Length: 282
Image 1 (cartoon, helix red, strand yellow):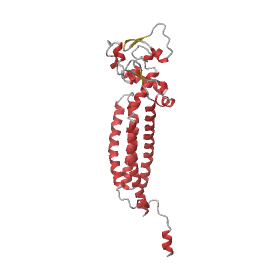
Image 2 (tube, helix red, strand yellow):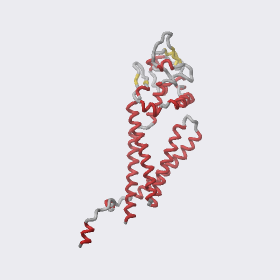
Image 3 (cartoon, rainbow, N blue to C red):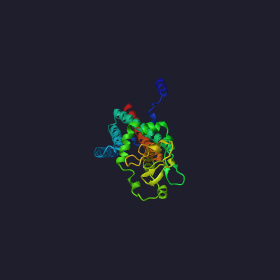
Image 4 (cartoon, one colour):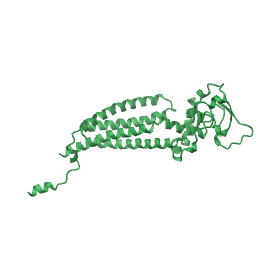
């Protein structure tokens, strides 16, 4: 009788709530990680090959890709073998990498959200041209994206990639035609002076100022008609590089879906780990 009372007073195990769950979390987790493993391996090999074949101007894309694909490869490999061998140690390794990965994904989503709020192109009156201002972005964006010691490399790559050639292909374009063009952010900020400067249009790559010109904007005096100078040293060029990063960082919706998908896989793995721990306690 005393033994029965003692058993009735025993507190249920924290893992006892999973005893009646019949969903095959471990199998599902193993299949999901096997898919991740193949995808991450293909991504890692592809990005690594591109990294060593491309020039330094494009390595700012492939270098992060190598680290991200290698992290996913390690995470999915640990998750697959953790589910296959039901190893507590491998589950711990998998979730350690998973939490680091989630931190990066959430941080990227926050960055895209903040950048989306701060990217505010200004349509110049009477034209179809959007202009960007570096002062529209907060200081943390400047420090994170446009570092002074790295701008020289970015500038050199813009010149090397001939980002203005398409705009300058029609040298007979009139001023009215030019001002009604739909310029890309790079063309608007780096290939012409800010329209607020009031410089006189001659050709797409040639703008002149009067002898008594007294505009105090720094970008207005930074502009140069030389092909390798133009407005590549302007703050407007730095601003459009940030804006272009906003366009290439995928949408906020994509980042949110990425978080939801990653969390779904993580939750399945979490249940698989808890079930494995329950089975080892029996």
